[in-house]
Image 1 (cartoon, rainbow, N blue to C red):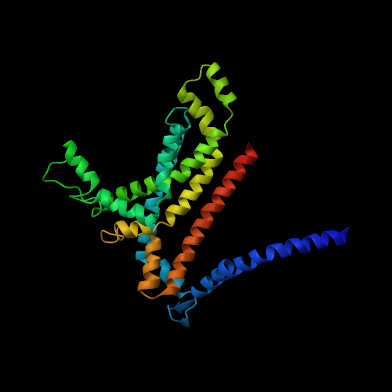
Image 2: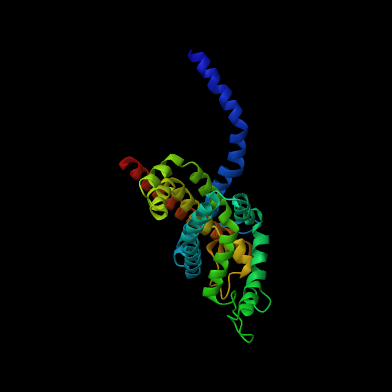
Length: 296
């Protein structure tokens, strides 16, 4: 019996071995090398010299790094709650039985098939002054006079609004599908019983739909926070981090430090700082979810 179990374990290990080799070679080993880089003065060409904890001390005193981290946090605070509300609203619209149900689902999901570059260049066209779609529509409706323009991409607050709107439009489709799938798993009998008891639409949403969506909401929240902290390319294309680096996120600073300033050691240090932040947030959410599950 033991021999059969041992053979089964060996066979399972042999089947897993190719994946383990690829995982170690392309994920685990680069992570170890990345940690090693944080203790060196490292350029694109070679490792220069051992500097110990200097990169970490430098990072803690680097105002430029803290500003970039705050900009990423602003983006998280702007997009995460808005994404949740928007995805739920779209899922509720697409979940209603109507002739346009398939049309809604297609239209709501369609932007998410675009690449980030395409979505960003579309955003540039939409929010461009003088010739952009938004300003043109505002002129057409008489909201803006012919002599006035809104410079969406060169004023800090407006730039954040433009970047957030473009990102929401481009990425909401994935979260919309998750919510739609979760809504379709809610038994119809529960809704029918609530209607028989005299519940209106608002009560049904707050007492039935939203509690049933709680598990997927927790998952989407964490995924959205992680994705928002990793924002880079759409900001890089739309504003370049401007005006005056006021929209530059931490990932863009890491990229500029590593590949423009040729300081890969310090760039790796900032990368692992961001990794640590996301890891802590994930652990906190995991602990909170487990406590709620145990209390329930």
